[in-house]
Image 1 (tube, rainbow, N blue to C red):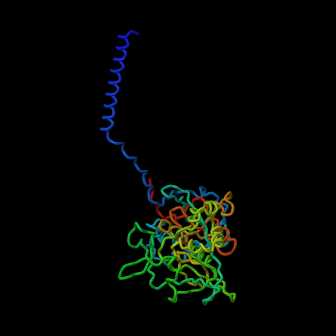
Image 2: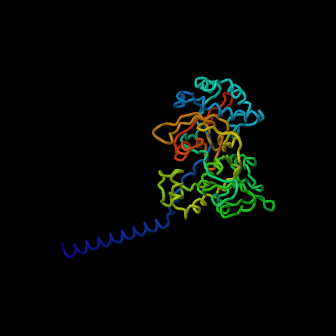
Length: 413
C-alpha cells in the first residue's frame, strides 16, 4: 500500500476510533441516566398456622382395621365424663371446631354400651358415631410426633444434704393468663407473671429460681436427689418420687412461670456437642452427667420453670383435667385442637422408624413444645419401656380426628 493508501487507512481507523468513543460515551451516559435495577422482592411470608380439615372415610385411615380400638375406650370415657359436666351449648375446641357439647352427648351416652375389650364392637361404635377428617396445617398433612412419660425420682419430705433440689409448689402470687379470653386471635396462647403496682410483670426465669429467688418462702413441696432428674421432670410435667422409707408420692404440673420453653438439645447441636440425628432425652442426659461443670448453665438456657402439686389416686392428670392413659393419650396444641377428640395417628414406631405406629388416641393434654395444628406428644406411661419410647420418639406422620356426625365442618376452598 502506498503512502496515500496508508494515510487513508489511518484516517479511516481514526474515524472509527472516534465513532466508537462517541458511541461508548453515549452508552455510558445512557447507563448513567437509566434507573437502578429494582431491588429483589423478599419471598412471601408463609401463612400463619391454621387447622384445615378434609373429610375422609374410615377406609382411608391406614391400618384402621388392625388396631385394638377397645384400648382407647377408657381414655375416651374419661374425656366424656369431663365433657358431660359442661353446658350443652359450650363450644368444643377453638372456634367450636368440634361442635358443641350437645354434639357429644349421644356418642358419649352410647359409649357405655360397648363391651370392654371387644375390638369389633369398639370399631363399629366409632364408625357409627363419628366421621374422620384429615388434619392439616393449611393443607399440609405431615407433622412431628414426639413422646413423654411419667418420670421417676428419689426424694425426701424434709431438706437433707442428700436431697438438695427442691420441687416448688405454685406461688400464691403467680398469675396464669389465658390470652384467648381477651381476643380470638390469641386463642390457645397463655402467659404468666405477678402483679406489681397494678401491672402484670414477668415472673422469675429458671436461672433466677435456681439461684434462690424462691428460697425461704415456704414453697418447697419435696426435695429430690438429682438436679438433672428434676430438670427432666419439668419437661415431662409429671412423675413419681420414691421416698427413703419406700413410699411413693406422685407429683403433677400445677403451673408454669410464663417463660417460653427452649429445647437445650438445639443448643448442644449448635455447639457441635451432638448431631441433630443423635439428640434424644438419653443423649442429652448423658451429656449433662458427663459435664457437671456446665450442666446447670445449659439447663438454664431453658427459662421455663414448672411448679408441682401432689396427686392422690389415678394420674398423671392432663390439661383436660382427666387422668392420662398410657399409649392412648395425646398432647396437642390447644390453640388448634380440641380436648376429648379421638385422634387416629399414622406415624413411625419410636424404636423402629421402618415400622408404622398406627393407633387411636384421645387428645387430653398439651405441652410447651407442642406447637402447630399437626403436632402431637404421645403419653407412654411409666417405667423403663415408657422412657425408652418417649426419649427417642421423633416420628414423622399425620393424623385424622374423629368428630360426631352431627358436627358441621365448614368446607374451605
